[in-house]
Image (cartoon, rainbow, N blue to C red; front, side, top):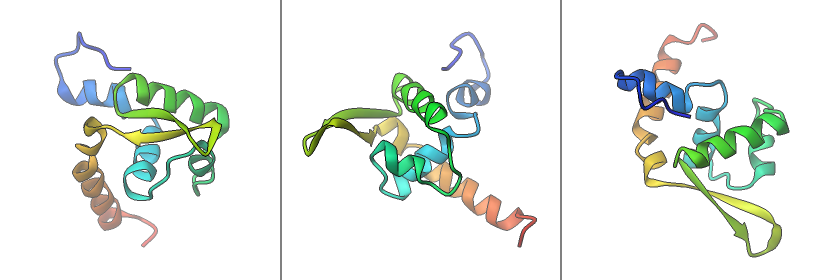
Length: 106
């Protein structure tokens, strides 16, 4: 969760999504059309279910995603990006371009 007492906007941003998994979840939500828990857990990065549960709760608490009950299966949630998350799309694209350009595995 973010730290409102910090004056640095980069540090405040990292407090929201600077852990290992949050940007991966947001990537899948924004670019890979993933909406259900099992879809996120099946990503190639193999996030564990307890970490995924925690990150989804944190991202929802920070206003980056919202969850609704899936009408097709009332036991499942559908996760949707908020405007706040959609505002991160150009930043994620820039990070992907940087990673592609500077990848040591090329």
